[in-house]
Amino acid sequence: MFYKESDTLRITTDPILRGLETEKYRSEFSRDYARILHSPSFRRLKGKTQLFPSNNYDFFRNRLTHSLEVAQIAKAIAVRLNWLLVNEQKIDDSIDLDLVSLAALAHDIGHPPFGHIGEKALDERMKNYGGFEGNAQTLRILSKLEHKTLDPEDFSLDTLRGLNLTYRSYASVLKYDRQIPHNLDKRKREIDNYVDGDIVKGYYTSESELVKKIKQSVIGEQHQNDMYTIECSIMDYADDIAYSVYDLEDALKGGLITLLDILSIDPELLSEITKKVNRKLHTNYDDVNITQVIYDIFSIVLTDSESSELATKIDAIDHMKFKQFYTAGFINNIAQKFSKNGYWRTQLTSALVGYFVRAISIKYNHDLPALSEVIMEDEKRVHIEVLKRITYEFQINSVKLKTNEHKGKKIIGDIFDRLQAYPGLLPNDFQNLYKSDDGINKERIICDFIASMTDDYAMNFYNQILTASSSDIFQPF
Image (tube, rainbow, N blue to C red; front, side):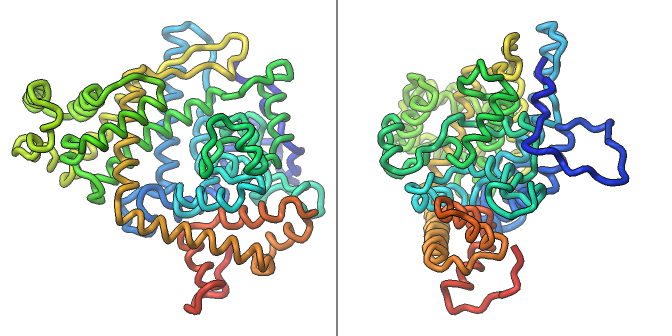
């Protein structure tokens, strides 16, 4: 069975709610789902960048709306896999939908303000203090920093229990079963082909004992190999689908990219995308293969006549002449549909999400059901990676987004430096943790505070402590 009693153990016993009977009608995972949904860290995702800055118009996605979409896609995948288990594999077992949903809702809670550039800025400051990484921060927030369970009464990092979730719930967000090296020298020694500036995926040293308990409860002491639970795998695929499809929609709506840009992609940029897809998926595609993948993706929602004509044109033309050809009226008309027409964009995203979800299946692990393997068809996996790379490459080459990223990196770096020099500027609860610490984790506490900020909070706090501009001194955290 996917679940056993030890999966529902918690770091500490939850305080008894006096006067209330035990809620036998609720599962432990349902309880954890509610804790995530009602947490301040989850609400703060509304103010954190996804693709575009979080305060730029209501249309564009932020980390909160992205997480909600990931949760829906993850639940759809789990429903499909449960159906396959019963109807095709004749296995009487099912994946818990609350657990899958909570993993998806929580997966980005650890991301700092200003998106991935914020993650890099914090890791740069923390590279000799244990590093910074969004997934590692998620585990730390859920297990320590959230204000729900304190055991015992004294207030210190050692007694914080965060949301006090079940061990299986923590396992569902543990994407990388590796302890991040504590300093730069260890990164260079322990990480193959490490390049200075790379973010190391994993969990912090401060959560290493927790990870041992998670693994012991979920897969047992005899199985201390890498742990990647089925719920975590489903969440990971759902995140990739949402990222590849909906970031593209935002990019089209925001004018960051047009379909004409994609279909007439610059040869140098196409080669870069091909190289990165091959590196990520260990494939051996060439530029012509990737061009065909791009055509296949968008032909899903073209009419039969449009799809047929596009296929004929692609087969007949020299790749190096794409740019000249695609400025022709036929392709330009198709491009306008997706760039300017919301109905076409919605049709595209809806079709792609369904297309990817239907490509997912499961390989049941009879010895360790928790580690059952979620599988996506190779062709569809390439499609997702191509879409992700297209949006990313246009994003990093966008002057508009580069300007915002540069600002975000400076804001985070300057705040960290100022708090390191003057920790008295920390809010009271973080100051209490800072003062109770023995000196090992002081930079980590500063990092925790900054990582929890929204984009706007970070800018306002920056103005409060580093500029002469007026700001609200009563801003709560």
